[in-house]
Image (cartoon, rainbow, N blue to C red; front, side, top):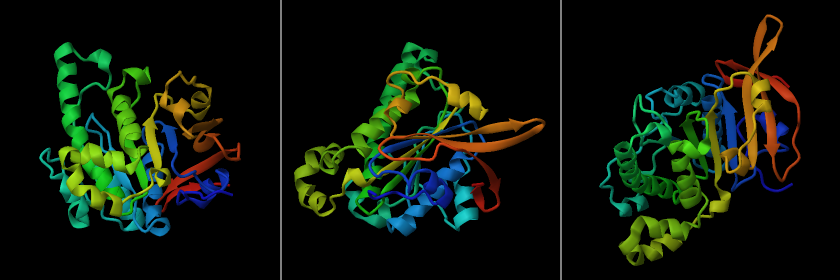
Length: 293
């Protein structure tokens, strides 16, 4: 069996044939409040045991809803999450100082109450968004790269909200850039994007701090319109959808048995590995997610 990335939930690892595959994208689907963020925090925390560093959380929430990452981390793992700076004038060379750059959490886009699709934006609003995005992505590059050169090998993307078409969502537009131009890109080229004209002056340190992007596991938490697991299982995947490009898809939804409601999880896709096809009930307890296998 090839090297696996454990999720922090042994029962889920068993369903996944031993865990997730490094260097790949996993999408976790489910409605608000189903348990996605708890799964993400558990996965990130597991990095401390497996990689020597906890994973990082990139929060893309734009409507002001709290994802409760800080509360879950403290209650479940006694982990006090630290937040990265959103200062647009960040010095790229600060990435070499772990005390400055090594932070657990970054929330760049605080656009409370605004829509998440391009079709809802006027021309001027689109222009404003693209200008904001360009500035914010420079901060994101420094934060991601700075964490990776100091040993982080897990990344959780949280707060992605539902849209009728992924191609119309500026959150998916942003994620596509982050995934392909930072997370899934050779470290040397990420450093070039970060340092630009200062790259030659930092080239030696770039080589000293080289990491393999193939070792980074990414978990995308995607909120769906669908609440029931059966509806999620029936949803079509459009061409170019992030789901079609994911290596692994985990669905979390409500179930109904007569007058009783429950929660269940299903591994809908796990490319390159055997996996368990069962629909597995789970509960959310004071100790986190409890899969009932």
